[in-house]
Image 1 (spheres, rainbow, N blue to C red):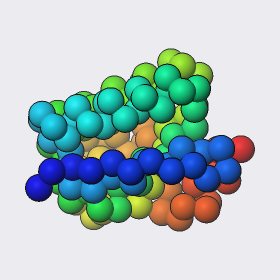
Image 2: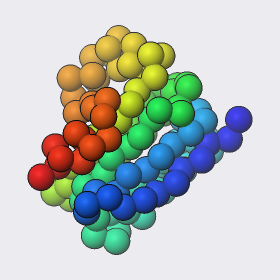
Image 3: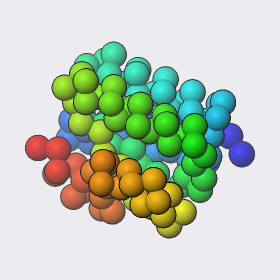
Length: 114
C-alpha cells in the first residue's frame, strides 16, 4: 500500500492528512518532502494527521523525528493528530510519545498552536 499525503490549511495551520504506511523508501521520502515543501512556503505550524497510518517502521519513526527537528529548527511547531493504537504504542515504546505534542481532536490541536 503506497502512502498518500493531502495538505490543507485551517486557521493558519497546515494539516497533512497521511494514509498508508510510513516505511523505508517511498513513505518516509514522501513525508520528508511534504514537510520540507510546507516549510519552504513559510508555513511553520504543521499538524500531521496519522488517523489513516496503519504502520510505521524504524525509518518512518526516524523521519517523524527528523521532521519534528527540522520544523523546530525553523522556529515552527509540529504536532501529531489521531494516532492509531499501533502507532500510539510504538511511540510509547520508543519513548517518543513525550517528545511529540499528540492530540486526538483536530479543532483542539489547531487551537493549541495559538
